[in-house]
Amino acid sequence: MQAKTASANDIEHFIKIIKKYKEPTSLTADMARELIDKIVIHETVGRKKDRQQQVDIYYNFIGQFDFAPTEEEIREAKIKAEQELAEKERLRKERAKKSNEAFQKRAMAARWAANDGHKFPKRVCEYCGKEFYPNGSRQKYCGADCLEAHGKAEAEKRRNQKKERRYPQRNCKICGKAFWPSHSQEILCSKECKIINYNRNHLAYYHRKQSEKKAKSKE
Image 1 (cartoon, one colour):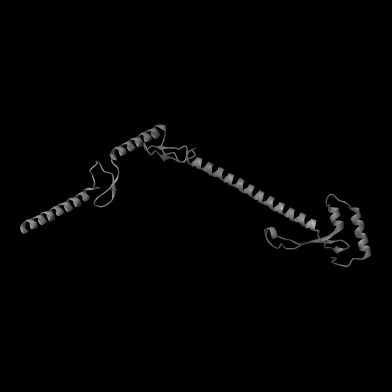
Image 2 (cartoon, rainbow, N blue to C red):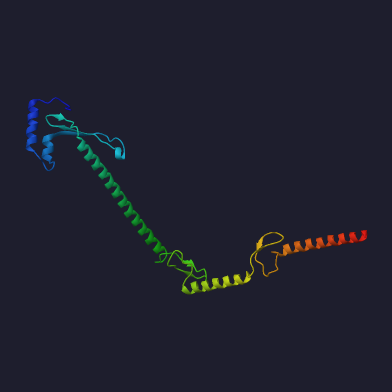
């Protein structure tokens, strides 16, 4: 579409300039001065993939021309836009990765400086109680000796528990709670339950004797 009416002389002059720069490999300053009168760049519309920006080019002698793109040009432009978007995303991820790596390095350097040149802060050994710098985030003991001693102590504790729990777990006859008996005849879990059981048996014995006395008196 022609923006203004161009005279025959203007068109002829423009064609001569076009022929002068036939099949150029790049746009030079001289070409731009001779061919282009002005370029109007409009405000962008849309965001991300739908972002568009109109650019109007006004040529010398003939004014503005809109050249309708072919389907192939539209397809190529779409592919180029997608490639540019993918490249931007790749560069963004690469920058984010480098930024994160730099942050991790600064944080690690600060942590080492705060811990007198050690990776992890001081801890207290769970066996001997001494302070030490661990080699990992899960280290609980200051050395192999404390680790071995802890293992032996735990093994001994398990053996003692096994001895104490020689008999299978039972439910108390009074309160119903589960407990570990110390001998085969134990059926009550605590001293309180034993007192309750004694009082119940004593009361039952008293009522039984009273019933026997009444039966004899009737005879």
